[in-house]
Image (cartoon, rainbow, N blue to C red; front, side):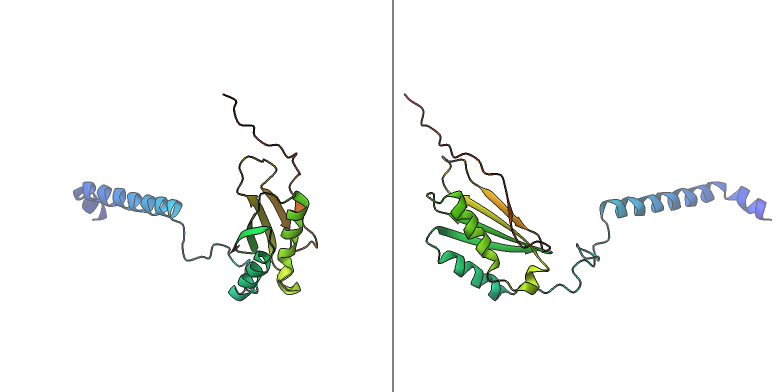
Length: 161
């Protein structure tokens, strides 16, 4: 009797199987292009992380801006990385800029420094000099910054007419 049922409805069985295969393939394609968004970006790597308070970041900005050489400061936190972007005056030397960059950790406690990496980007508004930007990085496992390689300071000459 099963054979007769299959023979009678052969086309219907094939259509059902075809659509089931298409449905399964569409689910796989959806999972490929749209992975599970319910999972946190960083997984469980941020468990137990002490959050940097906005007050601490604001105080760091104010302390850095008290320096006459600093024009602007912005900060952002991404996972376990604290990014600090500092714009300095055009007359600031590399050594002074590095000192300013290293002072970013003064307002952070030892607990935060053991949990966060700190990246400092120091730039100038002047495009004529090419010794900036410089980047400093301090790992949570380190006690000092490592800086990008110093470049010789050159200035662009204006084209002669």
